[in-house]
Image (cartoon, rainbow, N blue to C red):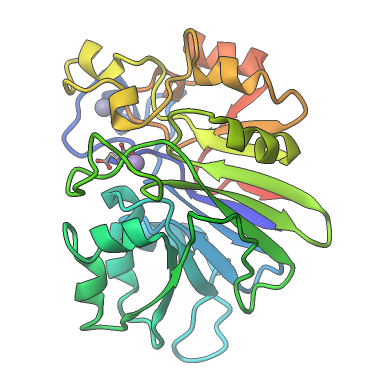
Length: 306
Ligand code: MLT
Ligand code: MN
Ligand code: ZN
């Protein structure tokens, strides 16, 4: 399978439009060691023709342009390689790109939990709005039983969506008290190569049911939003702690670095990096620490072949 990182930044992107933190200022000025990033999304394909989009970022049009013809097989006057969209949650940075796909000549095939569908039909009614355009064909991701799903036309890729702890969006009734189904991760396996990836751009806790799929995975592509729990507060950017926003910070006790040390054999890559995170400075001591531990930082356009 081909995993293409379309966007590696958290909500806001890098630089964020209204942010003058040292990171955003430096990347805006094209200083060495800083690389711009668009908002969180990956695309996965087994044949390079049909692609599943995991999350639809508000930057999707830029991402598709940056990908050249990679997701555009051009078989008809109106066509796309994107055959389905899987939503990991109902957050703005993962869903508002659906509006940009409204010209689709067939209904969008969207895989999401009933909780995500509810938020996208009420608090942020993207599904309702899309009904005036291409409309949505919803496929329910069950949170009751582990199912192996196969997306039609995407041959040889099996996916298992796994509920996990992160956070519901501010417009959800579950905000601050997130429920099973507000967030999922995905274990994706290429049947031919027998290689797999575990993707979770929002991940607050590695609960016991995640250990087995994460141990099996050849690549872990996981939440890299914040370096410390109090990063937003320390930088005067917000009053929220990382964990309150549903993100496990990398450093410190019970941080992502410590958690990832349990998965010695996997290739480890952080994704969904917030613009406040010091690892976005490629010369920072935090980034050098990751380098030493062989933990990579995803960038837009990164392709992983498995
Ligand atoms: C998050 O991951 O915490 C949210 O997506 C942030 C946002 O986009 O506002
Ligand atoms: Mn986000
Ligand atoms: Zn910033």
